[in-house]
Each structure stands twice: as C-alpha cells, then as structure tokens.
Length: 143
Image 1 (cartoon, rainbow, N blue to C red):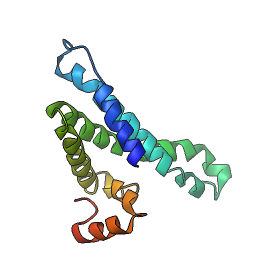
Image 2 (cartoon, one colour; image 1 turned 180 degrees about the horizontal axis):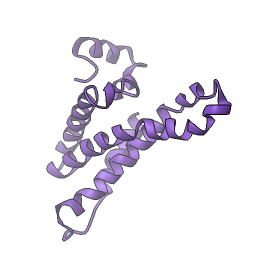
Image 3 (tube, rainbow, N blue to C red; image 1 turned 45 degrees about the vertical axis):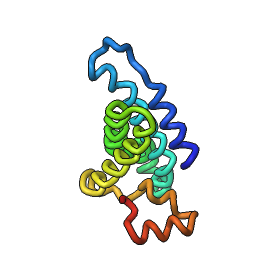
C-alpha cells in the first residue's frame, strides 16, 4: 500500500488541466484519477466474489464480470470525491494530510452508505504490522 498510495499522490499531483478550463475542468483530472485508482483497488480486492457464482456456473457464470466490476463502483465515486477536493484546496506538503483526511472521511462515509460495504477498507492494510494493529485497536480503523 505504501507504493500504491505514493503513486496515487504523484498521479494526482500530475493531473492537470488547462488553467482557463473553469473549476469543474480543473477538478476533473483529479476526480478521474481517484475514480480509476479506486476501480483498480476494488477490482483487485474483490476478485474472489466471482468464486461464489461458480457454484452453479451453468446459470451464473455470466454474472462474474458484473459482480467483480460492479461491486466496488459506488465506492469509486466516494474515493474520487475524497481525492478531488484535497488535491486542489491545499498546496505544498499539507496536501498529503488533506488527502489522508479525505481518505478517512470517505472511508467513514462508506460505512453508512452503499450498505456499509465492509470489504477492502484501507485500514486492513496495517494488519501485517503489529504496532499498527495495536494503534487501530485503540483509536479505531477509520480514525
């Protein structure tokens, strides 16, 4: 996750539009980058959903692409929104803190909307590090 989220920061920093394109035109590249990053994140993390449809593959194999590609799509919009605003509201090193705040806010919001969708939370990435697991126990995974 360290590598992928570092690349996300670089991609958002490099997402630029013409200065005269208006507010939405300037926000669109960061929104698209966040949406595509979220799409890749959720597809890579939800590939296992297709296995449930293989129990009776004759009837349900056609739905595998819909299950894998469509399950995370609503969450992609949250991720895109969480990336778009911080990238253009704060300059300098504060943009990384604003991006982390956007991640946290959107992950918290995801627990309430889109049925709470409990899979692929960013906080699961700290599981291999015992010290980080302890901090998640004390302050919560979304804090």
